[in-house]
Length: 141
Image 1 (cartoon, rainbow, N blue to C red):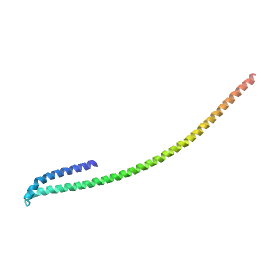
Image 2 (tube, rainbow, N blue to C red):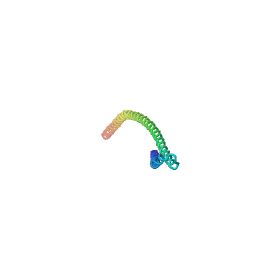
Image 3 (cartoon, one colour):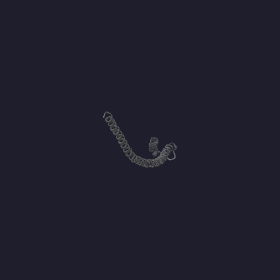
Image 4 (cartoon, rainbow, N blue to C red):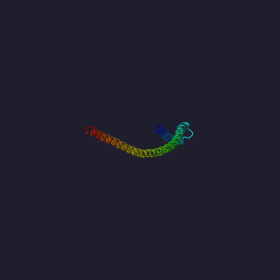
């Protein structure tokens, strides 16, 4: 897009430069001999080329302004989408914190259950050991 505008601007600059050079060269003769076609025609052509270059520049300015407006609108829409994504992200972060909070409760329950299980297993092993030694003591007596 920008390269296209630069090329058009460069072309207009060249057109304007050539036209002004011709204008300057033919001006004196055209004013000195206003009724002589061979002096008047190059001057009028150069004058028209300058007018065309100015019109092209004005048109290019309109195109640039139009594209800038479009880009500004696209940027505004992108900013709105980013804001929406930030809001969604904040909501997801909150849900993740809530899940982690619930997980800590679950983790605590799991730890408690594990400790209870270990105690039951230890008690069973201890009772089994006491029973074994009691059996052995009674048997060998």
